[in-house]
Image (cartoon, rainbow, N blue to C red; front, side):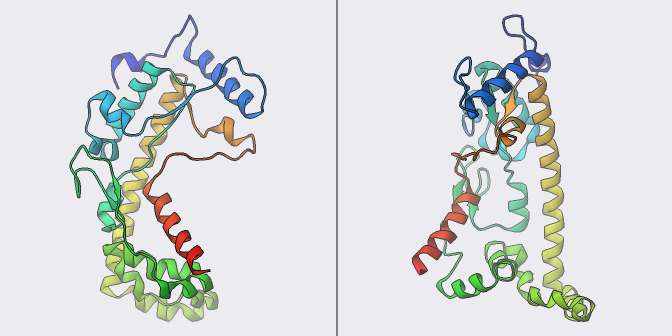
Length: 252
């Protein structure tokens, strides 16, 4: 964080706390279809951060401190009422051997945008199994298909066996001892630690942005109003879910 962004913002003699309150009311008024003092503005910076702050796009997905500084500098420059934070990081994807996404600095150049890697991740013969038991299909078929390091999960017994409690422990424990299953669980644990570290830094960034007078969108203001919030920012996960649903529609 730069020296300038570390200092609470002051606009027209107002402190960042006062600006935060005004912005909260402005957003709430718009959501409740009341007349705000002006139209509230929410910025989703996305890749613009790399261009405007002179950093690599790869850094936005891998360096939470660089992302935080870029968000703060951009917010202080453009003074939005709210902003959306980039919560994606490529670290867990690399650890799990994900096949659905190409990331800057890995399968792409360091200053390219991430790309959804088109593939037939749900096959025609999967539909009946998916509809009969989405959870079991997702764990034992889908995840091993889209993550090279999770192929061992296909060796697990059917999840329905868990309903027998202790009396189904023998096949579960035996499967966990398989080397490929152990490898998958170790990869998941490593990815989970990476995601937890990243998420903690994102939360810290949200708090710092609030101290500067800026709301995260969606935020506690929008969440408390019982209105639907439409996400207009495409991401690989959304594309993947859309691909699955599209396949289901075509099969009907």
